[in-house]
Image 1: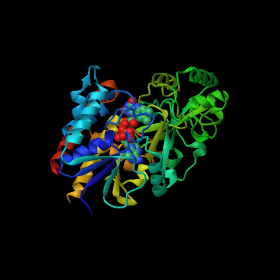
Image 2 (image 1 turned 180 degrees about the vertical axis):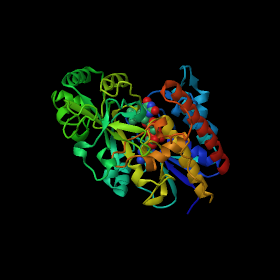
Image 3 (image 1 turned 135 degrees about the horizontal axis):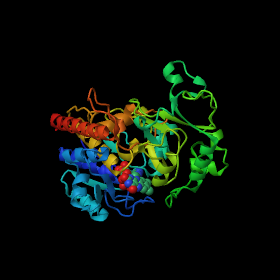
Image 4 (image 1 turned 135 degrees about the vertical axis):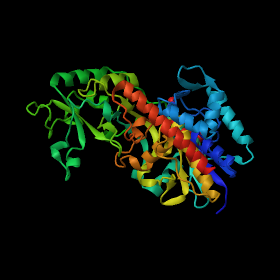
Length: 449
Ligand SMILES: Cc1cc2nc3c(=O)[nH]c(=O)nc-3n(C[C@H](O)[C@H](O)[C@H](O)COP(=O)(O)OP(=O)(O)OC[C@H]3O[C@@H](n4cnc5c(N)ncnc54)[C@H](O)[C@@H]3O)c2cc1C
């Protein structure tokens, strides 16, 4: 097999993957369709263009999981972080950048690299031979999308995400909520208690519906069709169809007995389902929404038991091409059915500039090592990069898989830390997570290049 690495898509992930592999001494060709073929969101022909906001979110590497991901990418000499640091704008604790010079610098640096060339044009078929990374992002061109769907099965490639909000389990009030599957269905006790239930009285339900209908909503971007299907309608759209629709849909109270008040029949019940193998995250079943983030937090905290809820991610519906990675990819990011092809970036089911670039960084390093005959492990699970890759290729529920941001709910709990609960305890725990991650990430870097 030839030793060149071909990367389809020169966005956040493709640019970082190219840089990492080229720095390791591998020849790289980036196949980028822009500016010849445009997307509705990109404005230029530059590599690593930021399509919307200019923020890389929190830069706090001690108390924030995305800040930790920044730290790991800096430690691995990532080009996206180099450019972000060079073009940083004042933004408090967040890392905001001057978008045009940011992308221009990445573009120029990659084009000047002796190991990198760019071939401008759309790739429409899956490559048969050679080493490839597909990093075509949420707006993968339709021809390539169709080719991927042909290989993976149409049901394994989504063109929209419909994300229900995800809550940290520890922030749910279990004096109000209880564990039970509807009609106690399931063979084992674990299955019979698979759902977490939050009960509502008639008054609470009516107040919730009012708040839902009057909440601020996000509009679809221009060029994005509002073609969501009946199976994943936003809750506010369901509520607009009739005040009782949710009570006969995702909030139906049947088959459930309140473990705290067995004699009280709930008027409506909100159910949450485990979202990861660790049991640290729960998604609110059927609650995909286009409410704006601020409004969403306010409305969701009206649900009894979720008054103090902290959200690992809020809900949304977007145009987004992504794979069912838990079933399709191995932990080296290779397509199981065609191991010469890796996937990276948002198409793997991560969400956001930073997460996408981080998955590019990993894919670039793994591909370069394979081409050079060095076998390396993927990033350790206790690092931010490792937590993400383990989630999308294994820890997440394949059946309900939706894109994920990095967050501390993806991290394995600390053993015997002696750290107490509450706000103060959380601060100590996050510091312990990030210390552990930094140590393990440094070791991983030393072990390999
Ligand atoms: C409208 C919109 C707004 C967003 N806003 C934000 C935001 O504010 N903050 C945030 O963190 N994330 C945002 N995202 C998510 C964002 O797209 C990702 O975070 C990030 O850009 C993904 O990186 P990527 O490398 O996977 O994809 P991209 O950065 O999109 O890069 C993919 C590249 O592949 C190219 N390509 C596609 N198909 C082909 C093909 N067949 N052949 C050759 N090249 C191809 C594209 O031209 C593009 O350059 C937004 C996404 C969309 C769609």
